[in-house]
Amino acid sequence: MGIVFRQSLKNTIIIYLGFLIGGINTLVLYTRFLKDEYYGLATYVFSASNLIMPITAFGVHFTIVKFFSGYKSKEQKDKFLSSVIFLPLFMAIPIGFFWDYFHDWILDFIAKSNSKENLIIENYTFCIYVIAVSCAYFEVFYSWAKVQMQSVFGNILKELYNRVAVMILLFSVYFNFITKQEFIYYISFAYILRALIMMLYAFTLYLPKFSFSLPNNFKEVLRYTFYIILAGSAGAIILDIDKVMIPGKEGFETAAYYAVAVFIGSFIEAPSRAMGQILQPLTSKSINENNQQETESLYKKSSINLLLIGGLFFILVNCNVSELFRLMPNKNYAKGGMLVVLMISSAKLFLMLLGTNGAIITNSKFYRITLPIGLGMALSVYALNNYFYNDLNMGTEGLALATLISVLLFNSFKIWFVKSRFKITPFTNKTLLMIFLILTLFLVFYFWNFNVPQLFINKFPIHPIINILLKSIIIVIVYVFIVVKLSVSNQINTLVSKYWK
Image (tube, rainbow, N blue to C red; front, side, top):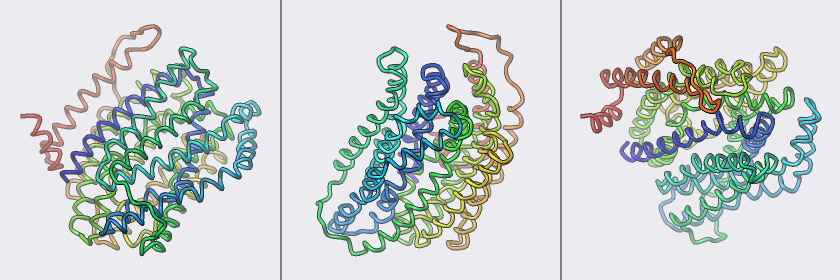
């Protein structure tokens, strides 16, 4: 786990720095500079592009990770990369050709709630396509770098670049360098530039000799790509269908309110995203080499370490959520928001408990199971969203509940599937202990805050930030002390002893 920890630590710092900037954007800048309506519009554009991205990527970003380490000669590696790099165009070009039909469908869907919303979205539907294609090729070249065991620079572009770009553009709106209407056009260009930078970096790491020859196992490559593109599309539906559904019923403002709560709840997943950048190719390598012992070791270590780190941030987020919402200029953000944060963060924590479960399945000979699992989750989320949100009128809490139920149900099946096929589980004798510790500290710290007097700087509330800092310091000290004393993770104890003599 040495290379995993080194690169994961760097990636975690980068991702949390990205989340910090994203938090400033989400909690302060978006809500004050762009306002609810255009913030909701931006949320809709980004979520809709995320739904299309897996289709335009054609599953190539997963295919590179699975197959690259299996080729032994440079010639076969070059043939493989030459053959897959153009596959996304087979989806992107037809989608672009028929985009007018997608444009009309989007307008009809949004017009159900408000004709004014229709006018706002009309000039931005093509940005959905541009961002989707740019993100697809970014992921392709990011995977290109990851199989060279170089994930840090790509992670900077993935987690920091876009948030810094958003911050710069939001300040540009504030100082009237650009208009709110131009914001999405500029951010679309930023995504295009990001994809080009990632491509150049990937080519510096490994530049194949391009040819029209196909690798020996190209049929297997295409078969895997077909399954993964459908499974990936289903995964995107789970993540973003709720944000796309909201404007059709309640308008873009509600989409903005929900996006803030989801962002706060998703904060805890940063370590999983960081560790996953390097664990995916390592898991693929161990499976390709039939190294069962290494596969199990990565599975268990990733699970307990992600649960440990994710548990800390689960407590920090949920025990400070009321103060976070007090930073919002509009009180509508807090309506139902705390419950949404709790359910989304619970779903994220459960996913972190799974460790490398997903990487084991997608990189093994059993990858075909990802299709029924993905489609089942997508259909489940869509059906439950409709039932809770439209039929029962539970509001955005219903959307979050649909996500939580689907995540718990189908990922429990994935744990059972890996256990039945590989005879391994992610659990150790410390797993239940960590779950008990997380729940106990959550209940201890959830129901109180420091009685800080109200303080404002230029009408911006400072007292919630003071409360968050004081409470977080106590939580971190108590949590780390208990975890180290219980020796939950050898890696964490080694890391702490290295810097704390």
